[in-house]
Length: 410
Image (cartoon, rainbow, N blue to C red; front, top):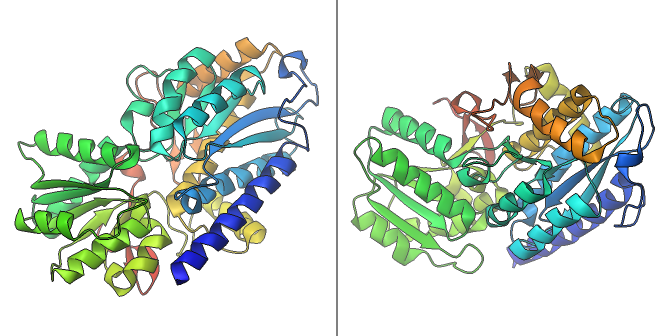
Protein backbone atom coordinates (compact mmCIF):
# COMPACT_ATOMS: atom_id res chain seq x y z
CA UNK A 1 0.00 0.00 0.00
CA UNK A 2 2.84 2.41 0.84
CA UNK A 3 4.45 1.82 -2.55
CA UNK A 4 1.13 2.42 -4.38
CA UNK A 5 0.62 5.72 -2.58
CA UNK A 6 4.24 6.72 -3.17
CA UNK A 7 3.98 5.95 -6.89
CA UNK A 8 0.75 7.95 -7.21
CA UNK A 9 2.30 10.92 -5.43
CA UNK A 10 5.43 10.66 -7.57
CA UNK A 11 3.39 10.54 -10.78
CA UNK A 12 1.36 13.57 -9.70
CA UNK A 13 4.48 15.55 -8.81
CA UNK A 14 6.12 14.63 -12.11
CA UNK A 15 3.07 15.75 -14.08
CA UNK A 16 3.15 19.08 -12.24
CA UNK A 17 6.92 19.34 -12.75
CA UNK A 18 6.69 18.70 -16.49
CA UNK A 19 3.90 21.27 -16.86
CA UNK A 20 5.99 23.79 -14.93
CA UNK A 21 9.06 23.07 -17.04
CA UNK A 22 7.12 23.32 -20.29
CA UNK A 23 5.65 26.68 -19.34
CA UNK A 24 8.72 28.27 -17.79
CA UNK A 25 11.25 26.84 -20.23
CA UNK A 26 9.25 27.73 -23.32
CA UNK A 27 8.21 31.15 -22.15
CA UNK A 28 4.54 30.25 -22.35
CA UNK A 29 4.67 29.74 -26.15
CA UNK A 30 2.31 27.28 -27.76
CA UNK A 31 3.65 24.00 -29.10
CA UNK A 32 3.76 25.53 -32.58
CA UNK A 33 6.63 27.89 -31.68
CA UNK A 34 5.91 30.19 -34.60
CA UNK A 35 9.16 32.12 -34.09
CA UNK A 36 11.61 30.60 -36.55
CA UNK A 37 15.20 30.47 -35.22
CA UNK A 38 16.35 30.59 -38.84
CA UNK A 39 15.11 34.17 -38.99
CA UNK A 40 17.30 35.21 -36.07
CA UNK A 41 20.28 37.21 -37.27
CA UNK A 42 23.60 37.32 -35.48
CA UNK A 43 23.28 39.21 -32.21
CA UNK A 44 19.50 38.67 -32.08
CA UNK A 45 17.83 38.11 -28.71
CA UNK A 46 15.59 35.38 -30.11
CA UNK A 47 15.69 32.36 -27.78
CA UNK A 48 17.76 29.31 -28.61
CA UNK A 49 15.32 26.41 -28.65
CA UNK A 50 16.54 23.05 -27.32
CA UNK A 51 14.25 20.04 -27.50
CA UNK A 52 13.91 17.70 -24.56
CA UNK A 53 12.40 14.26 -25.08
CA UNK A 54 11.71 12.61 -21.74
CA UNK A 55 9.40 10.31 -19.81
CA UNK A 56 7.12 12.13 -17.38
CA UNK A 57 4.53 9.36 -17.25
CA UNK A 58 4.86 5.58 -16.99
CA UNK A 59 6.87 3.32 -14.72
CA UNK A 60 10.15 5.09 -15.59
CA UNK A 61 8.89 8.55 -14.69
CA UNK A 62 10.35 8.60 -11.19
CA UNK A 63 13.76 7.83 -12.67
CA UNK A 64 13.73 10.19 -15.64
CA UNK A 65 12.75 13.18 -13.50
CA UNK A 66 16.41 13.43 -12.47
CA UNK A 67 17.46 13.74 -16.09
CA UNK A 68 15.35 16.77 -16.86
CA UNK A 69 16.05 18.33 -13.48
CA UNK A 70 19.76 18.16 -14.31
CA UNK A 71 19.09 19.79 -17.68
CA UNK A 72 17.04 22.51 -15.99
CA UNK A 73 19.98 23.45 -13.78
CA UNK A 74 22.22 23.72 -16.85
CA UNK A 75 19.71 25.99 -18.60
CA UNK A 76 19.32 28.22 -15.55
CA UNK A 77 23.08 28.55 -15.06
CA UNK A 78 23.67 29.48 -18.70
CA UNK A 79 20.83 31.99 -18.74
CA UNK A 80 22.01 33.52 -15.44
CA UNK A 81 25.30 34.23 -17.22
CA UNK A 82 23.63 35.99 -20.12
CA UNK A 83 22.67 33.02 -22.26
CA UNK A 84 24.61 32.13 -25.40
CA UNK A 85 25.83 35.17 -27.30
CA UNK A 86 23.20 37.19 -25.47
CA UNK A 87 20.35 34.82 -26.37
CA UNK A 88 18.44 32.89 -23.69
CA UNK A 89 18.13 29.13 -23.89
CA UNK A 90 14.60 27.72 -23.81
CA UNK A 91 13.60 24.08 -23.47
CA UNK A 92 10.84 22.57 -25.57
CA UNK A 93 9.86 19.65 -23.34
CA UNK A 94 7.85 16.69 -24.61
CA UNK A 95 6.71 13.52 -22.83
CA UNK A 96 7.14 10.31 -24.84
CA UNK A 97 4.89 8.42 -22.38
CA UNK A 98 7.34 5.54 -22.97
CA UNK A 99 5.73 5.06 -26.37
CA UNK A 100 8.16 4.58 -29.31
CA UNK A 101 5.60 5.84 -31.84
CA UNK A 102 5.07 9.01 -29.84
CA UNK A 103 8.83 9.32 -29.44
CA UNK A 104 9.24 9.31 -33.23
CA UNK A 105 6.54 11.99 -33.60
CA UNK A 106 8.38 14.15 -31.06
CA UNK A 107 11.59 14.01 -33.10
CA UNK A 108 9.63 14.91 -36.23
CA UNK A 109 8.03 17.85 -34.42
CA UNK A 110 11.38 19.00 -33.06
CA UNK A 111 12.84 18.93 -36.53
CA UNK A 112 10.02 20.41 -38.59
CA UNK A 113 7.51 22.26 -36.40
CA UNK A 114 9.37 23.46 -33.32
CA UNK A 115 12.61 23.87 -35.26
CA UNK A 116 14.94 23.27 -32.35
CA UNK A 117 18.67 23.71 -32.86
CA UNK A 118 19.48 20.50 -30.97
CA UNK A 119 17.90 18.20 -28.39
CA UNK A 120 18.61 16.09 -25.34
CA UNK A 121 16.90 13.17 -23.59
CA UNK A 122 16.95 9.47 -24.24
CA UNK A 123 16.04 7.96 -20.88
CA UNK A 124 13.80 5.12 -22.08
CA UNK A 125 15.97 2.87 -24.24
CA UNK A 126 13.14 1.32 -26.29
CA UNK A 127 11.96 4.81 -27.26
CA UNK A 128 15.50 6.00 -27.96
CA UNK A 129 16.10 3.08 -30.32
CA UNK A 130 13.02 4.12 -32.30
CA UNK A 131 14.04 7.78 -32.35
CA UNK A 132 17.67 7.28 -33.41
CA UNK A 133 17.15 6.47 -37.11
CA UNK A 134 14.65 9.34 -37.44
CA UNK A 135 17.40 11.73 -36.39
CA UNK A 136 19.26 10.67 -39.54
CA UNK A 137 16.42 12.27 -41.51
CA UNK A 138 15.75 15.31 -39.34
CA UNK A 139 19.47 16.09 -39.02
CA UNK A 140 19.93 17.81 -35.68
CA UNK A 141 22.24 16.83 -32.84
CA UNK A 142 20.66 14.79 -30.06
CA UNK A 143 22.42 14.23 -26.74
CA UNK A 144 21.58 10.78 -25.34
CA UNK A 145 21.90 11.33 -21.61
CA UNK A 146 20.91 7.99 -20.12
CA UNK A 147 19.82 5.25 -22.57
CA UNK A 148 22.45 2.53 -22.35
CA UNK A 149 21.82 0.79 -25.69
CA UNK A 150 25.00 1.05 -27.82
CA UNK A 151 23.10 1.17 -31.12
CA UNK A 152 21.43 4.48 -30.24
CA UNK A 153 24.79 6.23 -30.66
CA UNK A 154 27.04 3.76 -32.43
CA UNK A 155 26.63 2.05 -35.81
CA UNK A 156 26.59 5.00 -38.17
CA UNK A 157 24.55 7.46 -36.12
CA UNK A 158 26.20 10.80 -36.95
CA UNK A 159 23.63 12.99 -35.18
CA UNK A 160 23.54 11.28 -31.77
CA UNK A 161 26.08 11.83 -29.00
CA UNK A 162 26.17 10.00 -25.69
CA UNK A 163 26.81 11.19 -22.16
CA UNK A 164 25.44 7.92 -20.85
CA UNK A 165 26.72 4.59 -19.59
CA UNK A 166 27.10 2.63 -22.82
CA UNK A 167 26.11 -0.96 -21.99
CA UNK A 168 29.18 -2.38 -23.75
CA UNK A 169 31.57 -0.27 -21.67
CA UNK A 170 29.55 -0.91 -18.50
CA UNK A 171 29.78 -4.68 -19.00
CA UNK A 172 33.55 -4.51 -19.44
CA UNK A 173 33.87 -2.41 -16.28
CA UNK A 174 31.56 -4.77 -14.36
CA UNK A 175 33.45 -7.93 -15.36
CA UNK A 176 36.73 -6.44 -14.24
CA UNK A 177 35.19 -5.38 -10.93
CA UNK A 178 33.51 -8.74 -10.35
CA UNK A 179 36.67 -10.74 -11.08
CA UNK A 180 38.87 -8.49 -8.97
CA UNK A 181 36.63 -8.19 -5.92
CA UNK A 182 34.51 -11.36 -5.97
CA UNK A 183 36.99 -13.73 -7.60
CA UNK A 184 34.53 -15.25 -10.06
CA UNK A 185 33.33 -15.11 -13.64
CA UNK A 186 30.12 -17.09 -13.03
CA UNK A 187 27.67 -14.32 -13.81
CA UNK A 188 23.90 -14.61 -14.22
CA UNK A 189 22.14 -11.79 -16.08
CA UNK A 190 18.63 -10.94 -14.92
CA UNK A 191 17.05 -8.18 -16.97
CA UNK A 192 13.81 -6.45 -17.86
CA UNK A 193 12.45 -7.16 -21.35
CA UNK A 194 12.78 -3.62 -22.79
CA UNK A 195 15.67 -1.94 -24.54
CA UNK A 196 17.47 -1.13 -21.27
CA UNK A 197 17.63 -4.72 -20.06
CA UNK A 198 18.13 -6.32 -23.47
CA UNK A 199 21.00 -3.94 -24.17
CA UNK A 200 22.68 -4.86 -20.90
CA UNK A 201 22.21 -8.60 -21.45
CA UNK A 202 23.60 -8.47 -24.99
CA UNK A 203 26.55 -6.36 -23.86
CA UNK A 204 27.45 -8.65 -20.96
CA UNK A 205 27.17 -11.71 -23.20
CA UNK A 206 29.44 -10.07 -25.77
CA UNK A 207 31.99 -8.96 -23.16
CA UNK A 208 32.17 -12.45 -21.65
CA UNK A 209 32.48 -14.07 -25.08
CA UNK A 210 35.48 -11.85 -25.77
CA UNK A 211 37.13 -13.59 -22.83
CA UNK A 212 36.05 -17.08 -23.89
CA UNK A 213 33.23 -17.11 -21.34
CA UNK A 214 29.46 -16.87 -21.27
CA UNK A 215 26.78 -16.02 -18.68
CA UNK A 216 25.79 -19.07 -16.66
CA UNK A 217 22.17 -17.92 -17.05
CA UNK A 218 20.21 -15.15 -18.77
CA UNK A 219 16.73 -14.56 -17.38
CA UNK A 220 14.16 -11.93 -18.29
CA UNK A 221 11.11 -10.33 -16.67
CA UNK A 222 8.44 -7.73 -17.36
CA UNK A 223 9.51 -4.69 -15.38
CA UNK A 224 5.98 -3.30 -15.09
CA UNK A 225 4.08 -6.50 -14.34
CA UNK A 226 6.23 -9.22 -12.78
CA UNK A 227 6.48 -9.24 -9.00
CA UNK A 228 7.28 -12.88 -8.35
CA UNK A 229 10.76 -13.56 -9.74
CA UNK A 230 11.18 -16.92 -8.00
CA UNK A 231 11.34 -19.00 -11.19
CA UNK A 232 13.95 -16.79 -12.88
CA UNK A 233 16.06 -16.52 -9.74
CA UNK A 234 15.91 -20.26 -9.08
CA UNK A 235 17.16 -21.03 -12.59
CA UNK A 236 20.09 -18.66 -12.09
CA UNK A 237 20.85 -20.27 -8.74
CA UNK A 238 20.67 -23.79 -10.14
CA UNK A 239 23.00 -22.76 -12.99
CA UNK A 240 25.71 -22.04 -10.41
CA UNK A 241 25.80 -18.25 -10.64
CA UNK A 242 28.03 -16.56 -8.09
CA UNK A 243 27.09 -12.97 -9.05
CA UNK A 244 23.84 -11.47 -10.37
CA UNK A 245 24.12 -8.74 -13.01
CA UNK A 246 20.73 -7.10 -12.50
CA UNK A 247 19.13 -4.71 -14.97
CA UNK A 248 15.56 -3.92 -13.99
CA UNK A 249 14.12 -0.53 -13.15
CA UNK A 250 13.71 0.30 -9.48
CA UNK A 251 11.05 -1.78 -7.75
CA UNK A 252 11.50 -4.78 -10.07
CA UNK A 253 15.03 -5.18 -8.72
CA UNK A 254 13.57 -5.28 -5.23
CA UNK A 255 11.34 -8.18 -6.27
CA UNK A 256 14.42 -10.04 -7.51
CA UNK A 257 16.01 -9.51 -4.08
CA UNK A 258 12.88 -10.84 -2.39
CA UNK A 259 12.98 -13.97 -4.55
CA UNK A 260 16.65 -14.51 -3.75
CA UNK A 261 15.88 -14.21 -0.05
CA UNK A 262 12.96 -16.61 -0.36
CA UNK A 263 15.31 -19.19 -1.89
CA UNK A 264 18.00 -18.54 0.71
CA UNK A 265 20.42 -17.46 -2.01
CA UNK A 266 22.94 -14.76 -1.12
CA UNK A 267 25.36 -13.66 -3.83
CA UNK A 268 26.58 -10.18 -4.84
CA UNK A 269 24.25 -8.08 -7.01
CA UNK A 270 25.68 -5.54 -9.46
CA UNK A 271 23.61 -3.15 -11.58
CA UNK A 272 23.57 0.52 -12.61
CA UNK A 273 20.82 3.16 -12.77
CA UNK A 274 18.03 0.68 -12.08
CA UNK A 275 19.79 -0.36 -8.87
CA UNK A 276 20.50 3.26 -7.95
CA UNK A 277 16.82 4.15 -8.08
CA UNK A 278 15.22 4.26 -4.64
CA UNK A 279 12.44 1.96 -5.80
CA UNK A 280 14.90 -0.94 -5.52
CA UNK A 281 15.69 0.04 -1.94
CA UNK A 282 12.04 0.71 -1.06
CA UNK A 283 10.94 -2.77 -2.15
CA UNK A 284 14.11 -4.65 -1.27
CA UNK A 285 14.40 -3.01 2.15
CA UNK A 286 17.19 -4.54 4.20
CA UNK A 287 17.89 -6.93 1.32
CA UNK A 288 19.27 -4.00 -0.70
CA UNK A 289 22.06 -3.51 1.82
CA UNK A 290 25.39 -4.23 0.15
CA UNK A 291 24.07 -4.29 -3.41
CA UNK A 292 26.08 -2.39 -6.02
CA UNK A 293 25.10 0.31 -8.50
CA UNK A 294 27.46 1.61 -11.17
CA UNK A 295 27.15 5.40 -11.46
CA UNK A 296 29.00 8.37 -12.91
CA UNK A 297 28.49 10.58 -9.83
CA UNK A 298 27.54 10.35 -6.17
CA UNK A 299 25.93 13.24 -4.28
CA UNK A 300 25.88 11.64 -0.83
CA UNK A 301 29.48 12.74 -0.35
CA UNK A 302 31.19 16.12 -0.30
CA UNK A 303 31.92 17.24 -3.84
CA UNK A 304 35.59 17.97 -4.45
CA UNK A 305 35.33 19.48 -7.93
CA UNK A 306 34.02 23.01 -8.47
CA UNK A 307 31.52 22.22 -11.27
CA UNK A 308 30.03 19.44 -9.12
CA UNK A 309 29.86 21.71 -6.06
CA UNK A 310 28.04 24.42 -8.02
CA UNK A 311 25.68 21.91 -9.61
CA UNK A 312 24.72 20.34 -6.29
CA UNK A 313 24.31 23.74 -4.63
CA UNK A 314 21.96 24.95 -7.38
CA UNK A 315 20.10 21.63 -7.57
CA UNK A 316 19.34 21.50 -3.85
CA UNK A 317 18.39 25.19 -3.79
CA UNK A 318 15.86 24.65 -6.58
CA UNK A 319 14.43 21.25 -5.71
CA UNK A 320 15.00 21.03 -1.96
CA UNK A 321 16.91 17.74 -2.09
CA UNK A 322 19.85 16.06 -3.78
CA UNK A 323 19.21 14.05 -6.98
CA UNK A 324 17.55 10.70 -6.35
CA UNK A 325 19.31 8.98 -9.27
CA UNK A 326 22.79 10.44 -9.36
CA UNK A 327 23.97 9.43 -12.83
CA UNK A 328 20.80 10.64 -14.57
CA UNK A 329 21.07 14.12 -13.07
CA UNK A 330 24.81 14.44 -13.67
CA UNK A 331 24.62 13.15 -17.23
CA UNK A 332 21.65 15.37 -18.03
CA UNK A 333 23.55 18.40 -16.77
CA UNK A 334 26.85 17.58 -18.49
CA UNK A 335 25.11 16.62 -21.72
CA UNK A 336 23.22 19.90 -21.81
CA UNK A 337 26.33 21.92 -21.00
CA UNK A 338 28.26 20.20 -23.80
CA UNK A 339 25.47 21.14 -26.21
CA UNK A 340 25.55 24.76 -25.03
CA UNK A 341 29.34 24.91 -25.39
CA UNK A 342 29.04 23.53 -28.92
CA UNK A 343 26.35 26.08 -29.82
CA UNK A 344 28.52 28.90 -28.48
CA UNK A 345 31.55 27.73 -30.46
CA UNK A 346 29.59 27.06 -33.65
CA UNK A 347 28.95 30.80 -34.19
CA UNK A 348 25.34 30.57 -35.38
CA UNK A 349 24.52 32.11 -38.75
CA UNK A 350 20.74 32.20 -38.54
CA UNK A 351 20.36 29.49 -41.19
CA UNK A 352 18.76 26.61 -39.28
CA UNK A 353 20.05 23.82 -41.51
CA UNK A 354 23.61 25.16 -41.51
CA UNK A 355 23.55 25.87 -37.77
CA UNK A 356 22.37 22.36 -36.94
CA UNK A 357 25.20 20.91 -39.03
CA UNK A 358 27.71 23.31 -37.45
CA UNK A 359 26.64 22.23 -33.95
CA UNK A 360 27.04 18.57 -34.88
CA UNK A 361 30.48 19.20 -36.38
CA UNK A 362 31.57 21.21 -33.35
CA UNK A 363 30.48 18.46 -30.96
CA UNK A 364 32.40 15.90 -32.96
CA UNK A 365 35.69 17.68 -33.42
CA UNK A 366 35.69 21.23 -32.11
CA UNK A 367 34.17 21.17 -28.64
CA UNK A 368 37.51 21.32 -26.87
CA UNK A 369 38.03 20.85 -23.16
CA UNK A 370 34.98 20.60 -20.94
CA UNK A 371 34.94 20.47 -17.13
CA UNK A 372 31.74 18.91 -15.84
CA UNK A 373 30.05 17.29 -12.88
CA UNK A 374 31.25 13.82 -13.86
CA UNK A 375 34.85 14.65 -14.81
CA UNK A 376 37.13 16.79 -16.97
CA UNK A 377 37.41 16.00 -20.67
CA UNK A 378 40.09 17.13 -23.10
CA UNK A 379 37.74 16.46 -26.01
CA UNK A 380 34.55 14.52 -25.13
CA UNK A 381 33.83 13.27 -28.65
CA UNK A 382 35.72 12.39 -31.83
CA UNK A 383 34.70 11.37 -35.34
CA UNK A 384 35.20 7.74 -34.32
CA UNK A 385 33.65 7.94 -30.86
CA UNK A 386 30.40 9.71 -29.99
CA UNK A 387 30.36 8.38 -26.42
CA UNK A 388 31.91 10.72 -23.85
CA UNK A 389 31.57 8.33 -20.90
CA UNK A 390 34.24 5.63 -20.66
CA UNK A 391 35.55 3.40 -17.88
CA UNK A 392 37.39 6.37 -16.40
CA UNK A 393 34.01 8.03 -15.81
CA UNK A 394 32.54 5.16 -13.76
CA UNK A 395 32.08 5.11 -10.00
CA UNK A 396 31.06 1.96 -8.16
CA UNK A 397 28.49 2.72 -5.48
CA UNK A 398 26.90 0.53 -2.83
CA UNK A 399 23.76 0.71 -0.70
CA UNK A 400 24.69 1.21 2.95
CA UNK A 401 22.29 2.11 5.77
CA UNK A 402 19.66 3.18 3.26
CA UNK A 403 22.03 5.45 1.32
CA UNK A 404 23.88 4.94 -1.92
CA UNK A 405 27.50 5.71 -1.10
CA UNK A 406 30.82 5.33 -2.91
CA UNK A 407 32.15 1.80 -2.51
CA UNK A 408 35.58 1.31 -0.98
CA UNK A 409 36.07 -1.18 -3.81
CA UNK A 410 36.55 0.45 -7.21
